[in-house]
Image: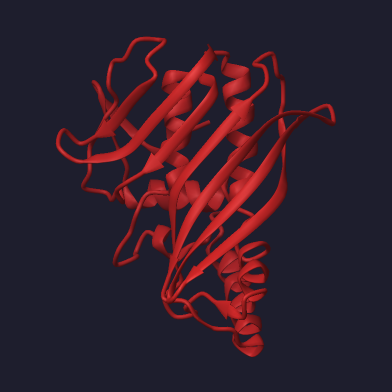
Length: 236
């Protein structure tokens, strides 16, 4: 599922602009301009890094991921050789840390569960803009910068009750927005369900900069523009 979106040499992985862009648009339905192949400040989607970690290191009952650097096409990430029960490790380029992983509890390397959780989380994650983020910020009479919508992945965590799952589905739960001047923090909570029963919870945190005063006309234009981008840029 992930092989078209990165290349691996020994213990290193890298991404072309096209691979990062295609993952965002094909897998996550994410049309954040930062992931466009021709973006001036292109960065690889955080969900792609998250997916690669699950693929290589498996799934633990408790997992926390902190994103501390933007990966572009010039970065080669080292996938460290860690013990199966290692509770902490970093994904780096040899010097700079780009992703820190904390995990605890039982773990599983079941390919079917890994594929299902990855697919469902990435699809869920891609629906947050504009459907959740814009109305959430609108409650405080603010909005993102329509000309430079800077929404950056900060961290995410997953807490599972058990690992004998087949196809966990995700649903939104109690989002929050904390405003601090022209910056803000979005907290998106979600539940994981198996056959309709709660089997875990999760949190995704994002940082927003360049916040503006809310304007309904501008919001309408932004949503129209975003939907048109999806139509124009969706890979065939």
